[in-house]
Structures are given as structure tokens and as C-alpha cells.
Image (cartoon, rainbow over all chains, first blue to last red; front, side, top):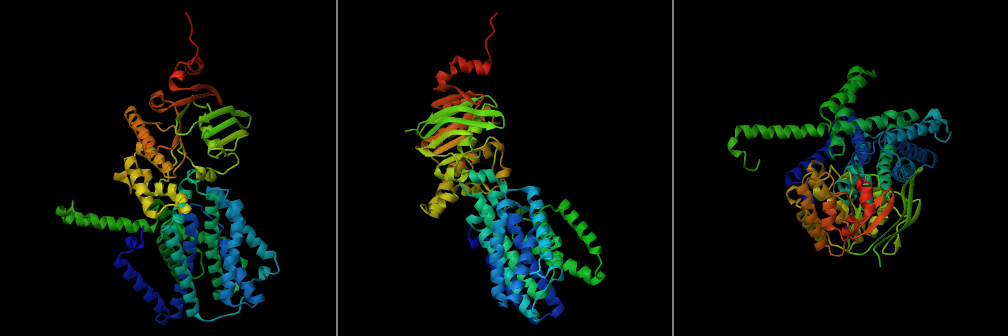
Length: 327
Length: 246
């Protein structure tokens, strides 16, 4: 379970180099590519935050977009109406989303399976309708934030947030007692309770924590995009994309959501550039999801494992004498 | 002083009386059997003790502390651990991780050092013959081993009272024999533990239990040592029906 066991020196070097490359990115690539990279970072963070709840704990939420939108609106309103600085607004947005999710989690987490999915989806829809009719949020007019036209700044913000969520997933969900508790809830809730785990508390914490990160990222998104509207930040497509990214990459794994977010976002942008604002890409997306679910139920992560296994198989065939050694 | 004291326990499922006016006393360090036909209310009794259900009426005491109204996890922390008739393992976690989950709340009490705990896991795994497959996922183990793992996981919580719900269900006679030896070994190593087990197979009850209760339709129909019970006409009637003369 120690860090040294899971991160060999080679992996650490690769990790370090990729960090350096990612930090230098804004000074090398064009602003178009940088904006796509910023988007990738944002979706990596969102997919990882969804994976805390859906992957490690097994509670498939279709309402995670509500946390994203809530964070976006809170940060936006704090900046426009109270004129608070960006990072302060972001922090408050995170805290408020956390508290709000803990309250919402109390009734919804009593549901499980598809009922939880429906419950959270209905809740997100309710949020969208609410924001549409309230005047304080700007209603259907949307909300305009003070513009800040610095692509590098937003790249680093999103990069930092994605890294933060990744570290939380790594430390709290992969390598701690807390992560073990969360997985125990996923596998057998009743048994977990009879082993002394306060599962209600665990579930609520995970729900609030994963919502908080979605909320913070939502706040950063609002400032980046400068104009938010209920349909753009509270629409069902936000949550749907998180779900699909995680399923595509590999649910309940650390790198699955990262891979899924990269593949899906890059694919989306590519098709957008090639075909413009057509909805044809949705068909291809649907097809891709069907294929992944049918042939790679554990996501693209399992593809890596299969390839590694096959490579091992090839080595075995080439060197039959080595079969019984340490391969 | 009784370790487990159940007084006038009643439980209704809608209009069905699953447990009615049940009284059971279990002395410390005993192995106590609960016997009865299917639907007699044995598992319901376990679910009531462990807080999965709340009783309609009656009292349950562990070492003088009332368990009624407490949550499952609170009862577990007071020292009650259990297994399930239909296995409830963490299938996607490894054998070691399954046992670690049982230890978590002990760990939080801060009484133990991490090293002591891993030594404990090792000895549990060895005791239950799971050491060769310690890193394997629980769901991939053969059935008999899964049953053993569930007992090991329950023991990891360091309970005063261990409830075993049909530990031998689905086992062949040879495996049952092994299980009897294993439970005796557990009793030897954890000398303070009290075990209550639900069982159909008389062989297991004979070999293990000091004392037993027979349930039928939610009521106690007999109490006593295993021998007394086997010769009790009420029990024989409930199990085999009345003898027809002629």
C-alpha cells in the first residue's frame, strides 16, 4: 500500500517529465491548442470528481452537472454582485457546494442503483428550472462575468484543479482507510455497516466532496467562459459527459477518467472543427459507447491491460525457455 | 452476568409475527446454538441483534447495554460481529482488504499500532488457511473459502460476541468437519469470545455447542444442552412430526 510500491522510479521520472511538459505548454503551443488543453484539464477534473462517487462508491449520479452549475453561478454572482476576487469566490463556491451537496445527499443517498440516478437527475433538472425563474441569477438572460482574457491563466487554473482532484483521488480514495470504506460501501453496504462503518456518514462525505470539486471547477469555468446560462452550465449534457468519460476510460480506476476525458474531449473538438455545429458527432459518440460497453466493459484501461498481456504472450512464445521464470 | 440477554422480543413483518415473546440468555465464553426449521425466525433474530431490523417490542442487552434503537455500526463497535447466510463479501476487494475493512474502526480507536494490526491480519489469514490466496479477489475464491473469509473478517473487528448464520450452509460433510475444527481453534485462540450460531445440521451443533435453543414459528420451544434437546419430545415433534401408531 505504500507509495513507493505503486510508483516505481521509472514511473516517477515519467510523471515528473510530463509535469514539466504540461507546465511549459502555454509557452509553446498556439492559443487554439491551449484552449483545447484547458478544456481537457477541466474535463479530467470533472470526470475524476464524478468517479469518486460513481466509481469508487458505485453511486451513479446523473445530477453532478447541478454541482458544476451551482459552483459556476455562486462564483459568478459573488464576482459580479459582491465584487469579490476570483480565488475567494472560487473558495466560497466550493464550500457552499459542499454544504449544499451534504444536505441534498441526506435524502438522495437513501436511494440506490437506478433510483439514485433518477433522483439526482430530477434534482439537477429542478436546479436548472429554479435558476431560470430566479431574478438574482439573471434567469434566462444568463450571467455575464467581468472578462479576463488571459488564456495562460485559465490553463494553469484548470491544470492546478485537475491535479488537485487527482491527488485527492490518489491519496484519499486509492491509498487510505477512507478509500477502503468507500469501496466497502460499493461492494456490500449492509456488511460494511455490521463491521462498524458508519456508511451514512461515508456516503455523505463522498457525495459532498465530489460535488465540491465539480463546483469549484464550475466556478473556474464561469470566469473562463465569461457568460453562463442555465442551459450551458446546468444542462443534462454536463453530467452525461462525465458519466460517459468515466465509463469510456474505466470506472473506479485512477487513470480511467483521465484517459476517458482526453479521448472524448479531443474527439468532440475534432468533430466540431471538421463538421461544425452539427449533431452528427452524437451518433458516433453513441456508437463508440456501445462498442466500449460491449467489448471493453472495464473501459479503455482494460485495453491497456490486454495489450500488456498480449505483449507478454508474444515474449513467452518467442522465448519458451523463459516461461517458468519471472514473466 | 449474561453476555447476551434477550427479553420478551417481538418482531412483526406487517401482519406476520416473525418473532414472538422470545427470551434467550447467553453466558460469556459459550458456544450457543440456535436451531430451527426454515422460517422459524433465526436469521430475523440475528438481524434484530445486529440492528438491521428494529424490534416491534422487547429488549436486547449486551453486557448490560441495551442494543435496541442503536445503528448496526454502533452495535458492531460495542463488540458484536456476524456473518451472513447468503455471503456478503466485498467481492471486488482482495482477501486482505476484506479483513482490513473489519479492522478499520479498531484502527481509529488508536489503541493499536499499524504493525500489530498487520500481524493480526497475517495470523487470521493463516488460521483460516487463506494465506495462499491473500492477494486474490474475494469473489474469485471457492465457496468454502469465501465462507471462511467471512468469519475471518468478522473476527477482525475483535468482537465479544460472534454470530454465525449457518456457517456450514452449502458445505460437504468433509468441509463441515473442517469447519468444526476451525471454530474450535478460533475458540481456543480467542478464549474470551462468545459464539452464537444458527444451524440446521445436528452434526455441527453436537460437535460444538454447549447449549442450544430450538425455535419454531418465532418462538422458543426448547432450551438445554444438545443432548437434552435431542431427546425432547416437543423438538422431535416439531422436526419429525407426530408418530403414527398402527
